[in-house]
Amino acid sequence: ALRIADIFRAKVLDTTIDSFIFELTGASSKIDKFVDLMRPLGLVELSRTGVLSITRGAEVF
Picture (cartoon, rainbow, N blue to C red):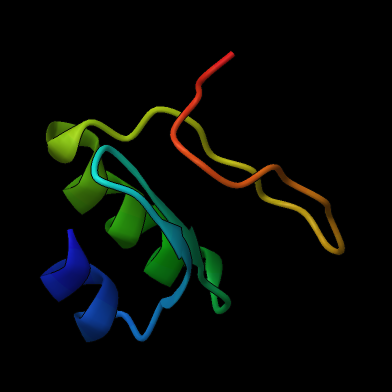
């Protein structure tokens, strides 16, 4: 996951033993490709928005 994030220049906002939170900006096609590559690795949640607030850590609701 970190290699893919690095290739796409995604910013790592949080990391735990079980999860990552990335910030990625850019064209829709770039984000679509990132999502396509992350899904097989267990992508659980995605938010396409402007300013937002998220909790940190591995707990999934």
